[in-house]
Image 1 (spheres, one colour):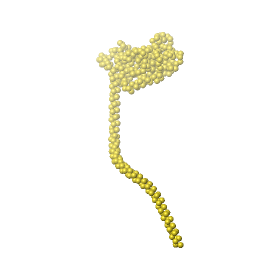
Image 2: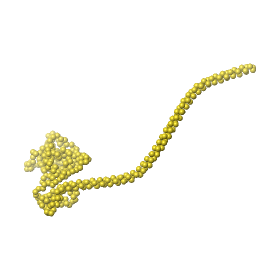
Image 3: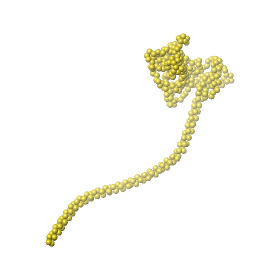
Image 4: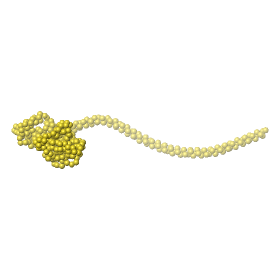
Length: 396
């Protein structure tokens, strides 16, 4: 519950005491999208408890708030836990106007939360001038006591007649504390900006005690001793205005200061908000100017690197153009040579065919001539031998 509901404190965390207390500060209350919101765990009587609130009411036009037994999923049928005293409070900037409700209850396995559906009307709670939700921040508190004497219950008139448990089926995820954080993140990523409600001063009581006036003077002194930035950052602007109102209503200021203080107070809280917005705007402008200067520096560096590389690229581009021209010439020459080769190949094919035919014919003719020649020669040789033999016989 970071950012939206982070500042939680409790006493005796994890210790088996009979008394447990919780103070829960919820930021950015108006931006909560969850229908229900759980506080961190606090302990009382060895049990884990948490506060459950319905920011927009549990089917009513009131802020709804309940005490929840945090380990309800582990309960067995028939389990009970008697809480003779529990209180819940919505804190007001003026402690006298804090809304506190007390009750008691026997918690059961099927009834593990108990509280008030109509704790405080939403119209009153959401009005910044009422002092409950200031600068979109509110604080709720709880106290649980498991060891209370019966006479104390009767003395303070504690009963559970006006309190109820949360109606209807509902499940509590162990990850619910992260839901509101990521809803807020989703809003921020979507571009939504924080706009606090207009805050006006609450109506001061008609009279103040000496201690209240002294305390108001001390608050004013503390605020004036620090920078205005700190006053706003610490959320003390409302406190300062309240203290000034107390002194004004108590006639503590000289006559010559009253008009100026009234003017100062007239739009003080709104002016503080505008001051914060203006500071944020100035920071954004300065950051933007720095970003622009950084970009310019980067561009200068890029430019100094660009031109030498660009010149090299031009040289290479010219070389490529020359090579492309040469390639065109080479291709044209290749085409001419290809045509010449084609003609020569045609002539060679014709010659080859003629040669093959001639050789084939020659081969056939040669065989015949050879046979005839061999026969003539053979006949001549026989005749010669016969003549030679006949002549030889004649000489004898």
